[in-house]
Image: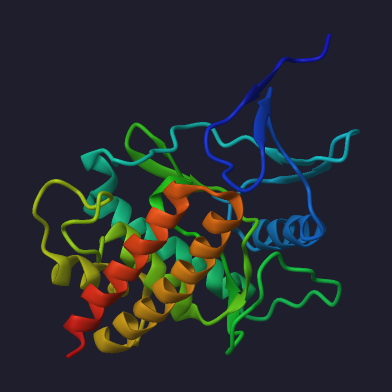
Length: 246
């Protein structure tokens, strides 16, 4: 008897469900590229990424299910522990180092890559794509938007979401006070970044402006007011971060 299938939360861009120990998601032209990427990084020792399992009979992508909890906003306080911040920075560096020399002549990425193409960026390395067990970070999911890009492009977005470097009025900001400068330095040290803080902040502003434009266009196309609000929020955070560069 076939195991029952259960829809999973998230999957805003493509439907996602679970059947037994597998996660099934709608495939696209980029899916073979993502499967090859996941196979490569796991061969390089990146065990916290899901194992690629090919395709189902109905053509959906199959991945190994990472057991644990994926938090959603408003994030619980434990998401912002120093242990998670350090591990996330170390893992992002691990991913980037594992893909620094990666080549795939048949690659078809879902989103356009960015120059310089130093590594393969996850492009959504954030708490809502992290898997936790007993408040401990154990995995990272949702690799559909991976693409070549600069290291700092990925690190800046992780800093935005997990430090988190956003204005206090952002609905996604934690309710408690944190030392943004200290947490940013902790993250950069964990990653081993030699970038300056102004350089990272400048990249973050560019990242948010790019994300705002993309989210706004999708929101308008879908007539989704929530996505349009998200885009406005990214724009406001980009403006806030720009003031820190003055």
